[in-house]
Amino acid sequence: MSRGVKPGAALRRVTRWWPLLSGLVAVVLAVGLGAIIARNGQPFALDTRWLTLVSGNRAPVWDSLALVMNSLGGGLVASVVVPGLLIGLLLFLKRPWAAGYALLVIVLSGAAVRLLKWLFGRARPQDLEDLLVSVDFGSFPSGHVANAAVLAMVLAVLFPFWWVWLAGALYTVTMMLSRTYLGAHWLTDTIGAALLVIGIAVAVWAPLAARLAAERRRSRAAHPWRTFHDRYVVETRELDAGSRRRFRVIAIACVGSGAVVFTLMLVSVLSDSGVTAIDLPVLEWLLESRSPVLTTVMIVLAVVFGPIALPVIVLAVCVGWGFGARHAWRPLLLAGAMATGVVLAQLIGRTVGRERPPIDLMLHGTDLTFSFPSGHVLGASDFLLVTAYLVLSRRLSARNTAVGLTLAVVGIVLAAISRLYLGYHFATDALASVSISLVVVGSVIAVDTWHAGRVVEPQARVSP
Image 1 (cartoon, rainbow, N blue to C red):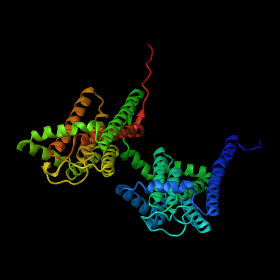
Image 2: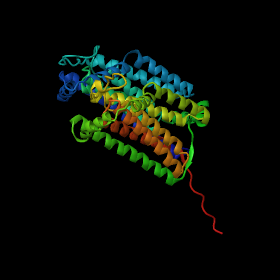
Image 3: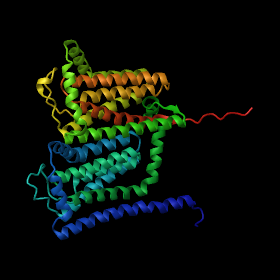
Image 4: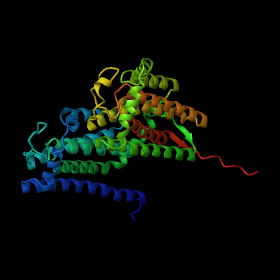
């Protein structure tokens, strides 16, 4: 070994060649794929079969999602606005090397995509009868997918958290699916774009890895946001190993049971069999129980857990909680859980498209939206279950837990009964909503325990 060279430094230099080589290989594969496509002059069998498959399964909800992805992945939003905001954020975080890395990867990726489009000149899909978006010249590689992959890779490299990697992968894959669904690209166009951008991002990162990592450590330690974050955003709590393990088991149990029950409800509703056998008997029994006083109570419950009052209540709770406790961690978890429930209700409702009970049974105005799942019950369940966990998890006692969970369950049952009593939902709609809430609260428990819980080992007993 050469004198004055540390073994660790030599090892880092050797291992750094592997990501550089891997990135260059990915770029070569993308260019090679484009060359093969240009030489053949015809789409691969995989391309035509995939395009036939996705175009034959179009639906209004998927059209809307694909058009949203089309807007996000192209034009000034993806090419200028998002990169500008990202680079500005990195400069604000005092990470100039990271900002330079992001700028270089974005510029190189954009230039490479334009060059390959001009070089290979692949024709867009022509056999699709109803192309849903307007397109320009050059199908290979996909510019939208390249923009998505650039954002995902830059964020994953500069903020190496598992959830950043997961979100970036999901965003990129969704963009790939949307481009073929809209008929704007062949499947191999999207694969080539992903390979090209991933290769560029990794190859540029390799020689800068040590400097970017050091800058990230300095930024986290010195930036004013870190002080604000540690003092006001995250509320750390001490847990022994046994308590943390129990919370993890509870989280897994909630997510698992919620997913199983929701799957059962979904299959039953789609096949109009199974558990849906209880829908009409339960609905008829509640309709027979109607009375003026009970109707007034149920309308009040519907208003409280409705789309106007409940968001106001959540906002007031989150703001008051944040100022009172001088931290934003639990209010942010509550707000995030509520927002997640709203998004899931909209996506699932539009996808399943289940009709509500007859309009003449509705006692509080006409509602022509979809029935499965119940948005009122989902909102009530998310609010009551997540709030109960966030409060009770800091007051570990059997009595408080029993009282809190009892109140939450009673509130959820009342919210569900009110929707059925007023003639807006079936029993399986309410059960599906509760099952989704179990998944949401299980996710909240997992995130809170992982991010805010700090394991403290019990003190060893001193022998006399």
